[in-house]
Image (cartoon, rainbow, N blue to C red; front, side):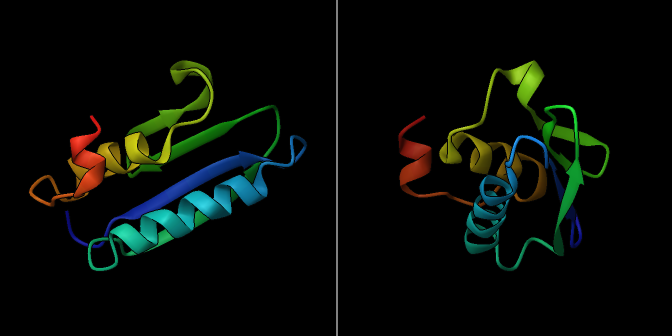
Length: 93
């Protein structure tokens, strides 16, 4: 997947912006050469989603809360760079 765009959609009413920013920073740190862009998308209604194109990586309502960062990184890696090792995050699976 060439230069994928990751969208993190978060509820502004729930004050989840800092959480979204933290996830974005972690993903950019782990995939500096694989990610083309991380977009923070404000929304309302308790939404918190992570999408890569048409692929829904995480949905707070579907998946039950917020992801552990290692789980989110594994899911993102499996879509954008399946051959990439995540080091200790792979070992904790």
